Length: 179
Ligand SMILES: O=P(O)(O)OC[C@H]1O[C@H](OP(=O)(O)OP(=O)(O)O)[C@H](O)[C@@H]1O
Ligand SMILES: Nc1ncnc2[nH]cnc12
Image (cartoon, rainbow, N blue to C red):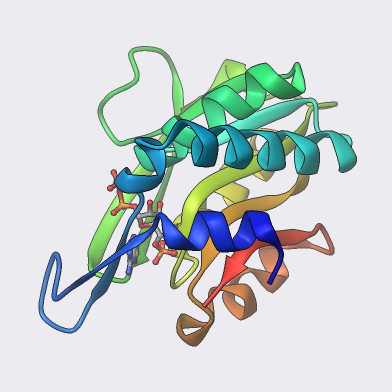
C-alpha cells in the first residue's frame, strides 16, 4: 500500500453496529480533523477529477459535500450539491434509491447540470452503490455526461461496483482505498 493510502486508512475509524446492528460504520471524522490527511485526500480527489476531464463535481449529501467541495476548488471546477429530498428551493430532478441501512431520495437543481457538462461524482463511501447509482441517473436525466465516480473508500463485499456497472456506461469508478 502507498504512503497516502496508509495515511488515509489510518485515519478512518471502524464503528461496529452503527447505525444499526450488523453494520461496520466507516467514520471519516478523524481524517477530516487531521490537516495533513485531509489535504492529501483533497489533492488526490482533485487529481482524479482533472485526469478524467471533468468540468463539474457532484457531491452527495452530506459527507460527499465535505470531500467534494474542497476538491472542486482545488481542481478549478464547479461544485454541484446532490441533496436529500426537500432541501433545494428551485426546480429539481429527483431519484429514489435504497442504501445499506434504509432508503432515501436525492435531488439536484435541474439548472445546475446541462448538456456538455462532464460530471465527476465524489463521495466518502461506496457501499451497496445505491446512492451513487441514483446520482448517475440524475446526471444522465439532466443531459450531462458522466466523467466518473470517485470515492475515498469502497466496501467491496457489498458489490457496489457491480451494481454501478450499467449506470457508469464505461466511465471509470476510482476508489482511493478498497476494503
Ligand atoms: O453505497 P450506498 O449503499 O448507497 O451507501 C453509501 C452512502 O451512504 C452514506 O451516506 P448516508 O446516506 O448515510 O448519508 P450522510 O452522508 O448524510 O451520512 C455514504 O456517505 C454514501 O453516500
Ligand atoms: N458501512 C458504512 N460506513 C460508512 N458509510 C456508509 N454508507 C453506507 N454504508 C456505510
